Amino acid sequence: MTKRPNEATTCAWISLMRTQRLALSRVEARLKEAKLPPLSWYDVLWELEKAGDQGLRPYELEKALLFAQYNLSRLAERLAAAGLIDRHECSHDRRGQVLKITARGRALRRDTWAVYAQAIEDAVGARLSTEEAETLAVLLKKLQ
Image 1 (cartoon, helix red, strand yellow):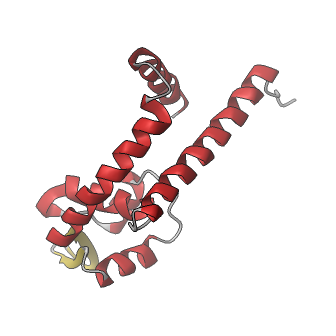
Image 2 (tube, helix red, strand yellow; image 1 turned 90 degrees about the horizontal axis):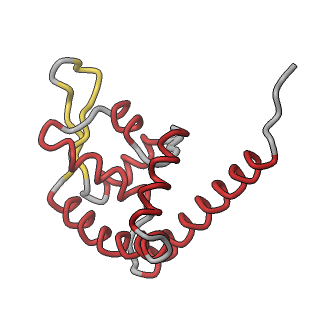
């Protein structure tokens, strides 16, 4: 017999999903209003910037991303075409490639962060005290 969630668990799930969807749509709207690319572009650029000069293989990037990415190769193509990332041959696996952020990609990531950071503040920081935000972070980590 399969155990079903109690009412509190179901309410928590519904609230979590609604909040996530609403927060992301607000962030995306802010980015669009500022004529910036979607959040998925920011996430890729951020992960590549953190990786530094060594870059990341596509599978490493996919594991690190904050969003569900079903077609990273198409997104990487768009970022490369925009001059935001470069593709390099992998030195130890000539069939593979390494993705690296460009100077133009770093600049766009910084510009995007200014808008994204304010959206995060409006969605969370302005609504929760520091202690509440810390508690929420701890609780959410338990679900990871």
